[in-house]
Amino acid sequence: MIGFKVIKIDHIAVASNNAQKINEFLMNMLSVKKYRQEKVVSESVKTSFFKVGDVNIETLEPLNDESTITSYLEKNGPGIHHIAFLVDNISAAIDYFKNNNIRVIYDPPKVGASNKLITFLHPKDTFGILIEISQKQ
Image (cartoon, helix red, strand yellow):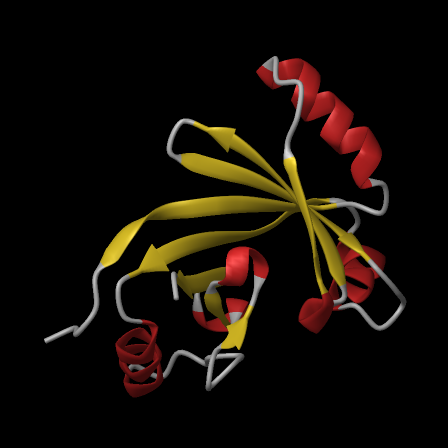
């Protein structure tokens, strides 16, 4: 038994050194006048969220050189960073992935954007895709 349920794709995240430019592009493309911004100190990142149907597009900009987004951008350049799935039980999800030899980055989970509990799955174990698992608190 799996022990948790994936509720939906929560967001798709895009990393950039200049979130203002990508945010302006998304505002124009989506015909929206505003979006939600948040600083996630635990990840050293500034996030912006654009609602598209039931899914968000999240832009990520590093707050400092210690941000994992800084090293990601140096290695890969701007682009899609991760896909996030909202689950009903993040603890059960972590146990499931660990029991199936999929490396979990944060165990226990951290508090991320929107005050959700988050962890990530190592992309070497998920076919090159960085996957975030999140749960509303």
